[in-house]
Image (cartoon, rainbow, N blue to C red; front, top):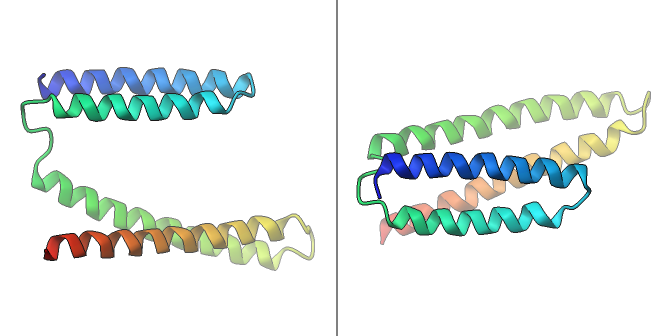
Length: 127
């Protein structure tokens, strides 16, 4: 299979998953999109192994890593600012406190996941 054909198949899967998720949300069926995501991920992993050409090069991976790190930093800063504002306004509306707490914990979880995956990948590179 060529890399171009694989990209076309991936695009079809994205459209199908979007349609399945949209219809499932309308019908309040939340297990269907989860099953569809798992099946599509498995099929795409299988098809990826059938590609005989180079799909990405080292430069793409380096840019992707920098973009991921920058995205984590931007999300963290925005989430912390919004969290502090919401904690400051919790006296006027008590509903702001759980939102701020959720933002705080999600930011911490994102940073812990990033740190853990970074350590794991660095450990794999050293071996």
